[in-house]
Image (cartoon, rainbow, N blue to C red):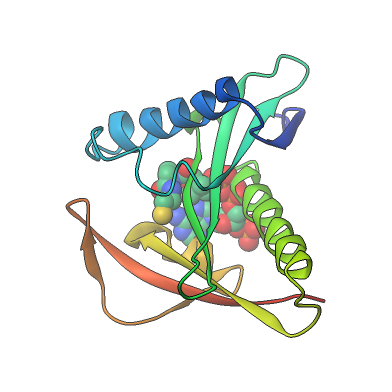
Length: 161
Ligand SMILES: CC(C)(COP(=O)(O)OP(=O)(O)OC[C@H]1O[C@@H](n2cnc3c(N)ncnc32)[C@H](O)[C@@H]1OP(=O)(O)O)[C@@H](O)C(=O)NCCC(=O)NCCS
């Protein structure tokens, strides 16, 4: 494996950075994996927090993850995690998930919850269930179809302390 490139994770804070997040998702989910391009940008995008991983100092985008919170259930949702193919196996996926978890903790604490845990949900593609399991996500219910491909709901009780 080559050396782990220097990088940073930022929360997209302007339209140009949000568009860079969308571009990575389209490259990975539509072009690489064959998911429909029409539904890649969905109803959560306008209300979600978009995390962008980029190389430093070039600021070339290489990875994304999206965080949102359901007003109905109060659960947090992890979605649209992707690292460009050339940059996998450097633990960048792990780092993105950890940045998202830290955001969840801070957001929950801002909302007044100081201890215990909060529920985080994700819809995992079947080949990456083992990736989420490494963080403690547990399968819940049966596999279901999402965008023409089988997925598994995975749930984590994320401790706030
Ligand atoms: C899933 C993805 C984000 C993982 O990113 P990555 O940077 O390659 O993964 P990391 O190097 O951070 O891996 C972290 C750990 O998970 C493991 N892992 C990685 N992919 C895995 C998989 N598919 N199944 C099980 N474990 C996996 C690694 O071996 C590593 O284990 P370790 O920490 O015990 O050594 C990346 O493969 C990707 O973008 N895939 C295409 C898009 C995708 O499928 N997204 C998920 C949609 S639900």
